[in-house]
Image 1 (cartoon, one colour):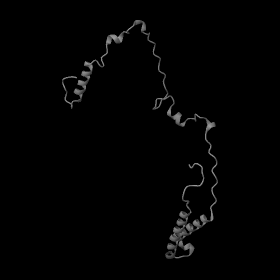
Image 2 (cartoon, helix red, strand yellow):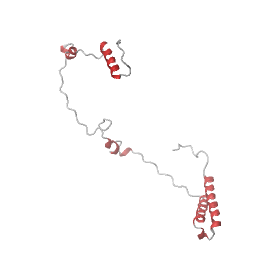
Image 3 (cartoon, one colour):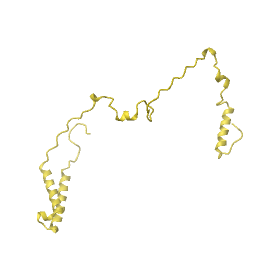
Image 4 (cartoon, rainbow, N blue to C red):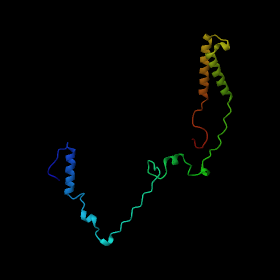
Length: 157
């Protein structure tokens, strides 16, 4: 290594010292004469003319041959023959008696809170009854929710 140690704060001087040490060891030096002439004249190949580069019409950010718009918005390369067609969904279950009771309590509670005069009850009586009817509807809905794992042995999605 070089005996002269530059100040570590001077980055340019430190870099110059490192480069000088590497060149003193022979790293990075090119023998100009050896570079210009081949070792054996018969091994030298004639230079081929450079082929002109083919312009790529908007290679995109990846440098591929397919533009981004064609990849994302173009036709499906798999074709229309191989696309997935989902099966028909099962029919909706018929609402039971419990669902009608919950709906009745919910509608009655809303009517008692919003327009108690339609029912013919005063506001002082209709407000607690409306709140009670809505609370009952919510409680019945929560009681109807199934607890535990779903029935069946098939895969769940």
